[in-house]
Image 1 (cartoon, one colour):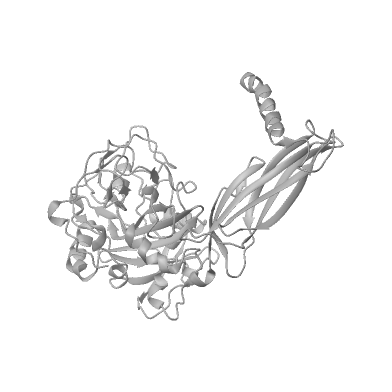
Image 2: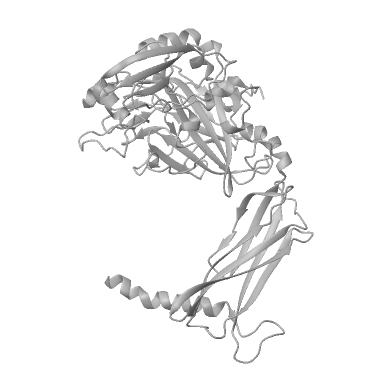
Length: 515
Protein backbone atom coordinates (compact mmCIF):
# COMPACT_ATOMS: atom_id res chain seq x y z
CA UNK A 1 0.00 0.00 0.00
CA UNK A 2 2.83 2.41 0.85
CA UNK A 3 4.43 1.67 -2.53
CA UNK A 4 1.16 2.45 -4.32
CA UNK A 5 0.77 5.74 -2.47
CA UNK A 6 4.27 6.70 -3.51
CA UNK A 7 3.32 6.39 -7.20
CA UNK A 8 -0.07 8.14 -7.06
CA UNK A 9 1.37 11.68 -7.56
CA UNK A 10 3.50 10.41 -10.44
CA UNK A 11 0.50 8.74 -12.13
CA UNK A 12 -1.61 11.88 -11.74
CA UNK A 13 1.11 14.09 -13.22
CA UNK A 14 1.57 11.66 -16.13
CA UNK A 15 -2.17 11.73 -16.84
CA UNK A 16 -2.20 15.54 -16.72
CA UNK A 17 0.82 15.81 -19.04
CA UNK A 18 -0.78 13.52 -21.63
CA UNK A 19 -3.89 15.70 -21.66
CA UNK A 20 -1.84 18.90 -21.88
CA UNK A 21 0.46 17.52 -24.56
CA UNK A 22 -2.36 16.73 -26.94
CA UNK A 23 -4.45 19.87 -26.33
CA UNK A 24 -4.43 23.17 -28.20
CA UNK A 25 -6.20 26.47 -27.52
CA UNK A 26 -8.06 26.38 -30.85
CA UNK A 27 -8.05 24.60 -34.21
CA UNK A 28 -6.43 26.35 -37.17
CA UNK A 29 -8.61 29.26 -38.29
CA UNK A 30 -11.18 28.83 -35.53
CA UNK A 31 -11.96 29.22 -31.87
CA UNK A 32 -11.52 32.18 -29.65
CA UNK A 33 -9.68 33.35 -26.55
CA UNK A 34 -10.11 31.08 -23.56
CA UNK A 35 -11.26 28.13 -25.60
CA UNK A 36 -9.58 24.75 -25.32
CA UNK A 37 -9.63 22.09 -28.00
CA UNK A 38 -8.25 18.58 -28.16
CA UNK A 39 -6.79 17.18 -31.35
CA UNK A 40 -7.16 13.52 -32.40
CA UNK A 41 -5.24 12.31 -35.45
CA UNK A 42 -4.38 9.06 -37.20
CA UNK A 43 -2.03 8.35 -40.10
CA UNK A 44 -3.19 5.28 -42.01
CA UNK A 45 -1.50 3.29 -44.76
CA UNK A 46 -3.29 0.61 -46.81
CA UNK A 47 -1.60 -1.90 -49.15
CA UNK A 48 -2.14 -5.30 -50.74
CA UNK A 49 -0.19 -8.43 -49.66
CA UNK A 50 2.61 -7.54 -52.09
CA UNK A 51 3.09 -4.11 -50.51
CA UNK A 52 1.46 -2.18 -53.35
CA UNK A 53 -0.43 0.88 -52.06
CA UNK A 54 -4.21 0.88 -52.43
CA UNK A 55 -5.92 4.17 -53.24
CA UNK A 56 -9.52 5.28 -52.76
CA UNK A 57 -10.00 2.97 -49.76
CA UNK A 58 -12.39 4.40 -47.16
CA UNK A 59 -10.97 4.50 -43.64
CA UNK A 60 -12.35 5.64 -40.30
CA UNK A 61 -10.92 6.98 -37.06
CA UNK A 62 -12.89 6.84 -33.79
CA UNK A 63 -11.81 8.52 -30.56
CA UNK A 64 -13.24 8.01 -27.08
CA UNK A 65 -12.77 10.46 -24.20
CA UNK A 66 -14.41 11.22 -20.87
CA UNK A 67 -15.97 14.36 -19.38
CA UNK A 68 -16.83 14.96 -15.74
CA UNK A 69 -20.50 15.95 -15.83
CA UNK A 70 -22.56 16.24 -12.66
CA UNK A 71 -19.89 14.51 -10.62
CA UNK A 72 -19.70 11.47 -12.91
CA UNK A 73 -17.42 10.59 -15.80
CA UNK A 74 -19.36 10.25 -19.04
CA UNK A 75 -17.93 8.70 -22.19
CA UNK A 76 -18.00 10.68 -25.45
CA UNK A 77 -17.25 9.28 -28.91
CA UNK A 78 -16.30 11.13 -32.09
CA UNK A 79 -15.32 9.76 -35.49
CA UNK A 80 -14.44 10.82 -39.00
CA UNK A 81 -13.78 9.10 -42.32
CA UNK A 82 -11.59 9.70 -45.35
CA UNK A 83 -10.03 7.98 -48.36
CA UNK A 84 -6.50 6.87 -49.10
CA UNK A 85 -4.56 8.75 -51.76
CA UNK A 86 -2.40 7.41 -54.60
CA UNK A 87 0.30 6.33 -52.15
CA UNK A 88 -2.20 4.41 -50.01
CA UNK A 89 -2.10 7.01 -47.22
CA UNK A 90 -4.77 8.93 -45.35
CA UNK A 91 -4.46 11.48 -42.58
CA UNK A 92 -7.53 11.78 -40.38
CA UNK A 93 -7.97 14.32 -37.63
CA UNK A 94 -10.68 15.73 -35.38
CA UNK A 95 -10.70 18.93 -33.34
CA UNK A 96 -13.02 18.80 -30.35
CA UNK A 97 -13.77 21.70 -28.02
CA UNK A 98 -13.55 20.87 -24.31
CA UNK A 99 -13.38 24.41 -22.88
CA UNK A 100 -15.90 23.80 -20.09
CA UNK A 101 -14.07 20.74 -18.80
CA UNK A 102 -10.41 21.13 -19.66
CA UNK A 103 -8.09 20.20 -18.06
CA UNK A 104 -9.34 18.78 -14.75
CA UNK A 105 -12.63 17.35 -15.98
CA UNK A 106 -11.41 15.99 -19.31
CA UNK A 107 -9.71 12.61 -19.81
CA UNK A 108 -8.63 10.93 -23.03
CA UNK A 109 -9.48 7.20 -23.21
CA UNK A 110 -8.41 5.56 -26.48
CA UNK A 111 -8.99 5.56 -30.22
CA UNK A 112 -8.87 3.17 -33.14
CA UNK A 113 -8.57 3.11 -36.91
CA UNK A 114 -10.37 0.80 -39.30
CA UNK A 115 -10.95 0.12 -42.98
CA UNK A 116 -14.48 0.20 -44.33
CA UNK A 117 -14.55 -3.21 -45.99
CA UNK A 118 -16.22 -3.83 -49.34
CA UNK A 119 -17.03 -6.99 -51.33
CA UNK A 120 -13.68 -6.53 -53.10
CA UNK A 121 -11.48 -5.61 -50.15
CA UNK A 122 -11.30 -7.13 -46.67
CA UNK A 123 -8.66 -6.72 -43.97
CA UNK A 124 -6.14 -9.53 -43.70
CA UNK A 125 -3.77 -8.07 -41.08
CA UNK A 126 -3.24 -4.76 -39.33
CA UNK A 127 -0.69 -3.05 -37.12
CA UNK A 128 -1.31 -0.08 -34.85
CA UNK A 129 -5.07 0.02 -35.30
CA UNK A 130 -5.55 0.82 -31.60
CA UNK A 131 -3.93 3.72 -29.78
CA UNK A 132 -3.84 4.72 -26.12
CA UNK A 133 -2.82 8.25 -27.16
CA UNK A 134 -4.67 10.90 -29.19
CA UNK A 135 -2.34 10.26 -32.11
CA UNK A 136 -1.68 7.01 -33.91
CA UNK A 137 -0.22 5.28 -36.95
CA UNK A 138 -1.81 2.21 -38.52
CA UNK A 139 -1.07 -0.10 -41.43
CA UNK A 140 -3.59 -2.41 -43.09
CA UNK A 141 -3.14 -5.24 -45.58
CA UNK A 142 -6.22 -5.97 -47.70
CA UNK A 143 -7.06 -8.92 -49.90
CA UNK A 144 -9.80 -9.59 -52.41
CA UNK A 145 -12.07 -12.44 -51.22
CA UNK A 146 -12.02 -13.76 -54.78
CA UNK A 147 -8.36 -14.66 -54.16
CA UNK A 148 -9.18 -16.42 -50.88
CA UNK A 149 -11.71 -19.14 -51.55
CA UNK A 150 -11.06 -20.97 -48.26
CA UNK A 151 -11.68 -17.81 -46.23
CA UNK A 152 -8.54 -17.81 -44.06
CA UNK A 153 -7.55 -14.26 -45.19
CA UNK A 154 -4.43 -15.60 -46.92
CA UNK A 155 -4.25 -15.60 -50.70
CA UNK A 156 -4.79 -19.10 -52.04
CA UNK A 157 -1.95 -18.74 -54.55
CA UNK A 158 0.51 -18.05 -51.71
CA UNK A 159 -0.33 -20.96 -49.43
CA UNK A 160 1.65 -23.76 -51.07
CA UNK A 161 4.76 -21.59 -51.69
CA UNK A 162 4.64 -20.49 -48.04
CA UNK A 163 4.43 -23.97 -46.55
CA UNK A 164 7.25 -25.13 -48.83
CA UNK A 165 9.50 -22.18 -48.01
CA UNK A 166 9.26 -22.59 -44.22
CA UNK A 167 8.79 -26.36 -43.81
CA UNK A 168 10.93 -27.78 -41.00
CA UNK A 169 13.78 -30.24 -40.92
CA UNK A 170 13.38 -32.97 -38.31
CA UNK A 171 16.21 -34.71 -36.45
CA UNK A 172 15.08 -37.90 -34.74
CA UNK A 173 16.50 -39.58 -31.68
CA UNK A 174 18.58 -42.65 -32.49
CA UNK A 175 16.83 -44.63 -29.77
CA UNK A 176 13.48 -44.18 -31.49
CA UNK A 177 14.48 -46.64 -34.24
CA UNK A 178 13.55 -44.41 -37.16
CA UNK A 179 9.94 -43.77 -36.18
CA UNK A 180 9.22 -40.83 -38.46
CA UNK A 181 6.09 -38.76 -39.14
CA UNK A 182 3.90 -40.57 -41.64
CA UNK A 183 0.70 -39.89 -43.52
CA UNK A 184 -2.46 -40.69 -41.57
CA UNK A 185 -3.19 -43.52 -43.99
CA UNK A 186 -0.66 -45.66 -42.11
CA UNK A 187 -3.12 -45.65 -39.22
CA UNK A 188 -6.39 -45.53 -41.14
CA UNK A 189 -5.50 -48.41 -43.45
CA UNK A 190 -4.11 -50.52 -40.61
CA UNK A 191 -6.94 -50.02 -38.15
CA UNK A 192 -10.64 -50.38 -37.64
CA UNK A 193 -12.85 -47.65 -36.27
CA UNK A 194 -14.13 -48.90 -32.93
CA UNK A 195 -17.39 -47.79 -31.39
CA UNK A 196 -17.21 -48.59 -27.68
CA UNK A 197 -20.14 -48.15 -25.32
CA UNK A 198 -19.30 -47.89 -21.65
CA UNK A 199 -21.17 -47.61 -18.37
CA UNK A 200 -19.98 -47.02 -14.83
CA UNK A 201 -19.53 -50.76 -14.32
CA UNK A 202 -17.18 -51.29 -17.25
CA UNK A 203 -17.09 -52.05 -20.93
CA UNK A 204 -20.43 -53.35 -22.13
CA UNK A 205 -20.41 -53.55 -25.92
CA UNK A 206 -18.36 -52.59 -28.93
CA UNK A 207 -18.53 -52.62 -32.69
CA UNK A 208 -16.02 -51.87 -35.42
CA UNK A 209 -16.02 -50.46 -38.93
CA UNK A 210 -13.47 -50.54 -41.69
CA UNK A 211 -12.04 -47.21 -42.76
CA UNK A 212 -12.96 -46.61 -46.38
CA UNK A 213 -11.44 -43.55 -48.07
CA UNK A 214 -14.65 -43.05 -50.05
CA UNK A 215 -16.87 -42.83 -46.96
CA UNK A 216 -17.44 -39.59 -45.06
CA UNK A 217 -16.60 -39.96 -41.36
CA UNK A 218 -16.55 -36.22 -40.65
CA UNK A 219 -19.65 -36.33 -38.44
CA UNK A 220 -18.18 -38.80 -35.94
CA UNK A 221 -18.14 -37.23 -32.48
CA UNK A 222 -16.73 -39.07 -29.46
CA UNK A 223 -19.04 -37.25 -27.07
CA UNK A 224 -22.17 -37.55 -29.22
CA UNK A 225 -23.43 -40.69 -27.52
CA UNK A 226 -24.07 -39.58 -23.95
CA UNK A 227 -27.33 -41.19 -22.82
CA UNK A 228 -27.79 -41.24 -19.08
CA UNK A 229 -24.93 -43.25 -17.59
CA UNK A 230 -23.72 -44.47 -20.99
CA UNK A 231 -21.05 -42.97 -23.20
CA UNK A 232 -20.05 -43.81 -26.77
CA UNK A 233 -16.36 -43.52 -27.66
CA UNK A 234 -14.94 -43.81 -31.19
CA UNK A 235 -11.29 -44.72 -31.56
CA UNK A 236 -8.73 -46.33 -33.84
CA UNK A 237 -6.49 -49.24 -32.88
CA UNK A 238 -3.00 -49.61 -34.35
CA UNK A 239 -2.01 -53.31 -34.54
CA UNK A 240 -0.28 -54.49 -31.37
CA UNK A 241 -0.47 -53.59 -27.70
CA UNK A 242 3.14 -52.82 -26.74
CA UNK A 243 6.00 -50.81 -28.26
CA UNK A 244 7.78 -53.96 -29.43
CA UNK A 245 4.65 -55.11 -31.26
CA UNK A 246 4.04 -51.63 -32.66
CA UNK A 247 7.61 -51.37 -33.97
CA UNK A 248 7.40 -54.83 -35.52
CA UNK A 249 4.28 -53.89 -37.45
CA UNK A 250 5.53 -50.39 -38.29
CA UNK A 251 8.80 -51.70 -39.73
CA UNK A 252 6.89 -54.13 -41.95
CA UNK A 253 4.82 -51.39 -43.62
CA UNK A 254 6.68 -48.08 -43.15
CA UNK A 255 8.15 -48.03 -46.65
CA UNK A 256 4.64 -48.01 -48.10
CA UNK A 257 3.94 -44.57 -46.65
CA UNK A 258 5.69 -41.26 -47.24
CA UNK A 259 7.24 -39.17 -44.52
CA UNK A 260 4.58 -36.51 -44.24
CA UNK A 261 4.03 -33.12 -42.64
CA UNK A 262 0.59 -31.53 -42.47
CA UNK A 263 0.49 -27.73 -42.76
CA UNK A 264 -2.30 -25.41 -41.68
CA UNK A 265 -2.33 -21.62 -42.16
CA UNK A 266 -4.21 -18.97 -40.22
CA UNK A 267 -3.96 -15.35 -39.12
CA UNK A 268 -2.93 -14.32 -35.62
CA UNK A 269 -2.91 -10.60 -36.24
CA UNK A 270 -0.55 -9.18 -37.34
CA UNK A 271 1.19 -12.47 -38.17
CA UNK A 272 0.71 -15.16 -40.76
CA UNK A 273 1.00 -18.50 -38.96
CA UNK A 274 1.87 -21.90 -40.35
CA UNK A 275 1.18 -24.84 -38.08
CA UNK A 276 3.20 -27.89 -39.03
CA UNK A 277 1.60 -31.08 -37.67
CA UNK A 278 3.47 -34.38 -37.35
CA UNK A 279 1.71 -37.74 -36.99
CA UNK A 280 3.59 -40.62 -35.38
CA UNK A 281 1.70 -43.96 -35.25
CA UNK A 282 2.60 -44.47 -31.60
CA UNK A 283 4.50 -43.05 -28.64
CA UNK A 284 7.17 -45.10 -26.82
CA UNK A 285 8.08 -43.08 -23.74
CA UNK A 286 7.08 -42.97 -20.09
CA UNK A 287 3.53 -42.61 -21.42
CA UNK A 288 3.05 -45.25 -24.08
CA UNK A 289 0.06 -44.62 -26.31
CA UNK A 290 -1.11 -45.19 -29.85
CA UNK A 291 -1.38 -42.25 -32.19
CA UNK A 292 0.78 -39.21 -31.50
CA UNK A 293 0.14 -35.73 -32.90
CA UNK A 294 2.80 -33.05 -32.39
CA UNK A 295 3.24 -29.59 -33.91
CA UNK A 296 5.17 -26.33 -34.13
CA UNK A 297 4.09 -22.85 -35.21
CA UNK A 298 6.06 -20.64 -37.59
CA UNK A 299 5.02 -16.97 -37.39
CA UNK A 300 5.69 -14.79 -40.44
CA UNK A 301 5.63 -11.06 -41.10
CA UNK A 302 4.07 -11.28 -44.58
CA UNK A 303 1.93 -13.61 -46.65
CA UNK A 304 3.91 -12.84 -49.79
CA UNK A 305 6.33 -15.80 -50.08
CA UNK A 306 9.09 -13.68 -51.63
CA UNK A 307 8.93 -11.15 -48.78
CA UNK A 308 7.98 -13.26 -45.75
CA UNK A 309 10.50 -13.78 -42.95
CA UNK A 310 10.31 -15.72 -39.71
CA UNK A 311 9.29 -13.64 -36.71
CA UNK A 312 9.08 -16.50 -34.21
CA UNK A 313 8.86 -20.27 -33.92
CA UNK A 314 6.71 -21.89 -31.23
CA UNK A 315 8.10 -25.26 -30.15
CA UNK A 316 5.64 -27.51 -28.30
CA UNK A 317 6.64 -30.50 -26.18
CA UNK A 318 4.41 -32.33 -23.72
CA UNK A 319 2.47 -29.53 -21.98
CA UNK A 320 5.13 -26.89 -22.56
CA UNK A 321 5.96 -24.26 -25.15
CA UNK A 322 9.10 -22.29 -25.95
CA UNK A 323 8.88 -19.22 -28.18
CA UNK A 324 12.13 -18.75 -30.11
CA UNK A 325 12.90 -15.56 -32.05
CA UNK A 326 16.64 -15.65 -32.82
CA UNK A 327 17.74 -18.17 -35.45
CA UNK A 328 21.27 -19.34 -34.90
CA UNK A 329 21.10 -18.18 -31.29
CA UNK A 330 18.20 -19.95 -29.64
CA UNK A 331 17.07 -22.27 -32.44
CA UNK A 332 18.60 -23.79 -35.56
CA UNK A 333 17.49 -22.99 -39.08
CA UNK A 334 18.48 -24.50 -42.43
CA UNK A 335 18.92 -22.45 -45.58
CA UNK A 336 17.66 -19.34 -43.76
CA UNK A 337 13.96 -20.29 -43.73
CA UNK A 338 13.58 -23.87 -42.48
CA UNK A 339 13.42 -24.34 -38.67
CA UNK A 340 15.10 -27.43 -37.30
CA UNK A 341 13.09 -29.61 -34.90
CA UNK A 342 14.97 -31.96 -32.60
CA UNK A 343 12.54 -34.74 -31.79
CA UNK A 344 12.53 -36.13 -28.24
CA UNK A 345 13.76 -38.10 -26.55
CA UNK A 346 14.77 -40.34 -23.63
CA UNK A 347 13.06 -40.18 -20.24
CA UNK A 348 15.23 -40.16 -17.14
CA UNK A 349 12.89 -42.55 -15.30
CA UNK A 350 12.12 -45.18 -17.96
CA UNK A 351 13.56 -46.90 -21.02
CA UNK A 352 11.27 -45.25 -23.57
CA UNK A 353 13.00 -43.25 -26.30
CA UNK A 354 10.17 -41.76 -28.32
CA UNK A 355 8.30 -38.84 -26.77
CA UNK A 356 8.27 -36.95 -30.11
CA UNK A 357 8.19 -33.58 -28.39
CA UNK A 358 9.43 -30.80 -30.68
CA UNK A 359 12.53 -29.09 -29.29
CA UNK A 360 14.57 -26.16 -30.65
CA UNK A 361 17.94 -27.56 -29.57
CA UNK A 362 19.37 -30.87 -28.39
CA UNK A 363 20.56 -31.63 -24.87
CA UNK A 364 19.10 -32.49 -21.47
CA UNK A 365 15.78 -30.74 -20.85
CA UNK A 366 15.14 -30.54 -17.12
CA UNK A 367 11.64 -31.29 -15.84
CA UNK A 368 10.27 -31.30 -19.38
CA UNK A 369 8.33 -34.55 -19.38
CA UNK A 370 5.37 -34.04 -17.08
CA UNK A 371 2.14 -32.08 -16.94
CA UNK A 372 2.75 -28.86 -14.97
CA UNK A 373 -0.98 -28.65 -14.20
CA UNK A 374 -0.64 -31.86 -12.19
CA UNK A 375 2.77 -31.51 -10.52
CA UNK A 376 4.46 -34.64 -9.28
CA UNK A 377 5.97 -35.23 -5.88
CA UNK A 378 9.08 -33.20 -5.15
CA UNK A 379 11.35 -36.21 -5.44
CA UNK A 380 10.05 -37.17 -8.89
CA UNK A 381 11.90 -35.14 -11.49
CA UNK A 382 11.20 -36.27 -15.05
CA UNK A 383 13.71 -34.83 -17.48
CA UNK A 384 14.25 -35.66 -21.12
CA UNK A 385 17.43 -36.23 -23.08
CA UNK A 386 17.12 -35.06 -26.67
CA UNK A 387 20.19 -36.47 -28.36
CA UNK A 388 19.79 -35.20 -31.93
CA UNK A 389 21.80 -38.18 -33.19
CA UNK A 390 19.14 -40.09 -35.12
CA UNK A 391 17.76 -39.89 -38.64
CA UNK A 392 18.12 -36.53 -40.35
CA UNK A 393 14.93 -35.75 -42.28
CA UNK A 394 15.59 -32.74 -44.46
CA UNK A 395 12.73 -30.34 -45.13
CA UNK A 396 12.54 -31.13 -48.84
CA UNK A 397 12.13 -34.89 -48.35
CA UNK A 398 8.65 -34.68 -46.83
CA UNK A 399 5.31 -34.88 -48.52
CA UNK A 400 3.53 -31.67 -47.51
CA UNK A 401 -0.24 -31.79 -47.16
CA UNK A 402 -2.21 -28.57 -46.77
CA UNK A 403 -4.97 -28.71 -44.15
CA UNK A 404 -7.81 -26.22 -44.62
CA UNK A 405 -10.42 -25.50 -42.00
CA UNK A 406 -12.58 -28.63 -41.71
CA UNK A 407 -15.76 -26.66 -42.35
CA UNK A 408 -14.32 -25.52 -45.69
CA UNK A 409 -14.00 -29.06 -47.05
CA UNK A 410 -16.63 -30.58 -49.33
CA UNK A 411 -16.58 -34.11 -47.95
CA UNK A 412 -18.86 -35.46 -50.65
CA UNK A 413 -16.11 -34.59 -53.12
CA UNK A 414 -13.20 -35.26 -50.72
CA UNK A 415 -14.25 -38.04 -48.33
CA UNK A 416 -10.59 -39.04 -47.87
CA UNK A 417 -10.16 -35.84 -45.82
CA UNK A 418 -13.01 -36.61 -43.42
CA UNK A 419 -10.53 -37.80 -40.78
CA UNK A 420 -9.71 -34.14 -40.10
CA UNK A 421 -13.21 -33.32 -38.85
CA UNK A 422 -13.87 -36.64 -37.08
CA UNK A 423 -13.67 -36.26 -33.31
CA UNK A 424 -12.09 -39.64 -32.86
CA UNK A 425 -9.30 -40.93 -30.63
CA UNK A 426 -6.23 -41.94 -32.61
CA UNK A 427 -5.53 -45.26 -30.93
CA UNK A 428 -6.50 -47.88 -28.40
CA UNK A 429 -8.16 -46.25 -25.42
CA UNK A 430 -5.66 -47.41 -22.81
CA UNK A 431 -2.30 -49.16 -22.82
CA UNK A 432 0.14 -49.97 -19.99
CA UNK A 433 2.94 -47.41 -19.60
CA UNK A 434 6.28 -47.39 -17.78
CA UNK A 435 5.42 -44.06 -16.20
CA UNK A 436 2.15 -45.35 -14.83
CA UNK A 437 3.86 -48.37 -13.35
CA UNK A 438 6.76 -46.31 -12.03
CA UNK A 439 4.49 -43.76 -10.38
CA UNK A 440 1.77 -46.28 -9.50
CA UNK A 441 -0.90 -44.14 -11.12
CA UNK A 442 -2.46 -46.51 -13.63
CA UNK A 443 -6.24 -46.36 -13.17
CA UNK A 444 -8.42 -49.42 -13.28
CA UNK A 445 -11.28 -49.49 -15.77
CA UNK A 446 -13.95 -48.68 -13.22
CA UNK A 447 -12.29 -45.45 -12.11
CA UNK A 448 -11.49 -44.54 -15.69
CA UNK A 449 -15.05 -45.11 -16.92
CA UNK A 450 -16.70 -43.40 -13.98
CA UNK A 451 -14.65 -40.31 -14.68
CA UNK A 452 -15.57 -40.33 -18.37
CA UNK A 453 -19.26 -40.68 -17.53
CA UNK A 454 -18.97 -37.60 -15.33
CA UNK A 455 -18.03 -35.69 -18.46
CA UNK A 456 -14.24 -35.51 -18.63
CA UNK A 457 -13.97 -36.35 -22.30
CA UNK A 458 -10.33 -35.58 -22.95
CA UNK A 459 -9.11 -38.24 -20.52
CA UNK A 460 -6.60 -35.92 -18.84
CA UNK A 461 -7.11 -37.36 -15.38
CA UNK A 462 -5.08 -36.01 -12.42
CA UNK A 463 -3.36 -39.39 -12.03
CA UNK A 464 -3.00 -40.12 -15.74
CA UNK A 465 0.51 -40.07 -17.22
CA UNK A 466 -0.74 -39.48 -20.74
CA UNK A 467 -1.22 -43.06 -21.90
CA UNK A 468 -4.55 -42.38 -23.57
CA UNK A 469 -4.63 -41.57 -27.31
CA UNK A 470 -5.04 -37.99 -28.57
CA UNK A 471 -7.61 -36.45 -30.82
CA UNK A 472 -6.50 -35.16 -34.21
CA UNK A 473 -5.27 -31.61 -34.97
CA UNK A 474 -8.71 -30.01 -35.34
CA UNK A 475 -9.63 -31.05 -31.79
CA UNK A 476 -6.26 -30.23 -30.25
CA UNK A 477 -6.42 -27.06 -28.07
CA UNK A 478 -3.48 -25.70 -30.07
CA UNK A 479 -5.39 -25.64 -33.39
CA UNK A 480 -5.45 -22.05 -34.70
CA UNK A 481 -3.59 -20.88 -31.57
CA UNK A 482 -0.13 -19.47 -30.96
CA UNK A 483 1.97 -19.20 -27.83
CA UNK A 484 0.58 -20.30 -24.49
CA UNK A 485 -2.79 -22.02 -24.88
CA UNK A 486 -4.94 -21.83 -21.74
CA UNK A 487 -3.72 -24.28 -19.12
CA UNK A 488 -2.85 -26.91 -21.73
CA UNK A 489 0.42 -25.46 -23.04
CA UNK A 490 2.30 -23.36 -20.51
CA UNK A 491 5.64 -21.59 -20.79
CA UNK A 492 8.68 -23.71 -20.12
CA UNK A 493 10.51 -21.91 -17.33
CA UNK A 494 13.39 -24.26 -16.59
CA UNK A 495 16.80 -23.42 -18.05
CA UNK A 496 17.10 -24.98 -21.53
CA UNK A 497 20.31 -26.80 -22.41
CA UNK A 498 23.01 -24.55 -23.88
CA UNK A 499 22.80 -23.75 -27.57
CA UNK A 500 25.39 -25.74 -29.50
CA UNK A 501 26.54 -25.68 -33.08
CA UNK A 502 24.83 -28.21 -35.28
CA UNK A 503 25.43 -29.14 -38.89
CA UNK A 504 23.40 -31.60 -40.97
CA UNK A 505 25.14 -34.83 -41.98
CA UNK A 506 27.36 -34.12 -44.98
CA UNK A 507 26.20 -37.14 -46.95
CA UNK A 508 22.57 -36.05 -46.73
CA UNK A 509 22.83 -32.42 -47.77
CA UNK A 510 22.28 -32.86 -51.48
CA UNK A 511 19.12 -31.22 -52.80
CA UNK A 512 16.74 -34.07 -53.49
CA UNK A 513 13.67 -31.88 -53.39
CA UNK A 514 10.52 -33.27 -54.92
CA UNK A 515 8.75 -29.91 -54.92
